[in-house]
Length: 77
Image (cartoon, rainbow, N blue to C red; front, side, top):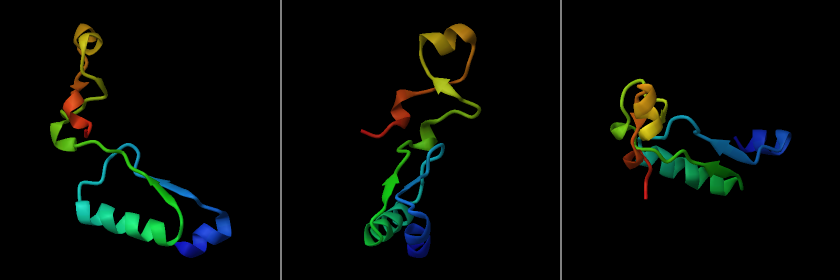
């Protein structure tokens, strides 16, 4: 990864869309990112709270349209 960082100027990585469920994997990624001076932008969402086929925030609008909502509890504090 360090070679890619230097060759292409990669400065950031993200897991956007789906959070990493394994804390050891995330810790390892962050330790390695620090070693090569890059940033990890983590998608901090606990997928265990997310309902299957959900795609929008759970609230009045999702209820009004009959959409499966994503509850606020998925976001870490």
